[in-house]
Image 1: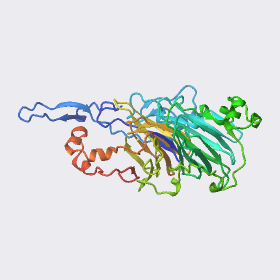
Image 2: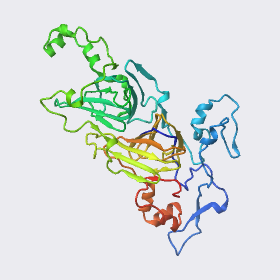
Image 3: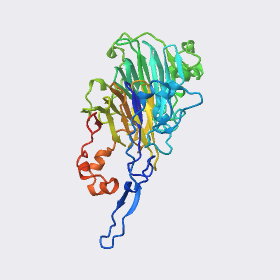
Image 4: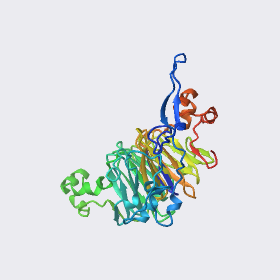
Amino acid sequence: MWFISVLALAAYASAAPAGTASTAIISSTSTSVSTIPSSTAATAAVPSPTVAYASDDLNDSLWNQYQSGTPEPIIGSTGANILGPQNVPLERESPDFMAPPTTDSGSVENVKWSFSLSHNRVQDGGWARQQNENDMPIATTMAGVNMRLNAGGIREMHWHLTAEWGYTMAGSCRVNAVDQLGRNYLADVYPGDLWYFPRGIPHSIQGLNDTADGCEFLLVLDDGSFSEDSTFLLTDWMAHVPKEVLAKNFRVNASAFDHIPDRQLWMLPSAVPTQSVAEANPSSPAGIAPLPFTFAASKTDCRATSQTTGGTVKIVDSRTFNISQTIALGEVTVVPGGIRELHGSARVTVFASSGNARTFDYQAGDVGAWTGKQDEFERTHTYISGYVPPSFGHYVENIGNTTLKYLEIFNTNVYEDISLNQWLALTPPDMVKAHLQLSDETISQLQKVKPVIVGPGEW
């Protein structure tokens, strides 16, 4: 899963299951040792001790504490102050790195990246910055691009070996494409709207000015090695074909190409379109592409949209946006103090099995990566991104004081996850007791329907 936060402070973390030896603090007193009855009642031996109970120590976020004074790696009576130089602004952004929860353990690859650390390609017409596996090696199945186009600015006509999924964050833009059968498509998109171009489909994007000076959007590509600097560009191609060949191909004189660029443009300024979509789109003998390349998610309730006291989840996948066969979206909001329940997807703890777990803190502009039932990507509204590999358990907690909004982006055609709460509720109670030693009262409160988001005060 690839994710990015868009509006508020979030933390991303994963914790090892309670009762395993991977917890950082284990009681050594005899009263904290659990026992398992023998399976044979007649010849039952004295119960054997298993592992110690998980610690009851609280692991509240130190975010607020770290925003004033000098952050120090001190937790209660453990740790010590830093005697050497400190990067205080960076330490304030990641308190769970400086003073990690006691449930963190072992080693987990980095699943957080900030677009603020990405190299920005600035050109006449706009700019773009990207995150791929060079920045976050664990993110092998998806890469992200944050792009801005001025009004009239064009991301050059191009194609690539990956599918491209786009999410409009601000302003508006016009996208166009032509498929392999000569069917064309032209549409305008607005904040919250999506587009999807299958691999090999040539397309372009242009900023409009009807709502703002151009647009800004997020792109997700279904290959972690993708680079926005290595796409197949119209001008680059034309510049590397002899003009006499161009003349033969287009059945014109070679002089018709006297003014084509001698190298790629990549991004370029232009006038804002004045014609409507219907007026501007050329009529194709093959007709219009049958499956729309865009989806007005901002105006659509969408499939499986759910709302709780803790927030909302809007799902857009191939069941509603039919052409989107490799990317599925969950647009999530979480109120302050709420939590996107433990699921197999902003304080985020990522559980990587075998006693390995680590907690990450996210704010706007960061990209996070962690593993859920499928790869997914999330974003809070300031360009933080992350990546979670398939099957890594995780949760997202809003530790800020405003509503968190982020995107969960899966490398699949259908949005799916596994809820820990629902999994336990639909498992025979004796099986759950054998693992976790929960009381009947606690088991009776497990949810057979996915809670999805848990609001503050619901526990």
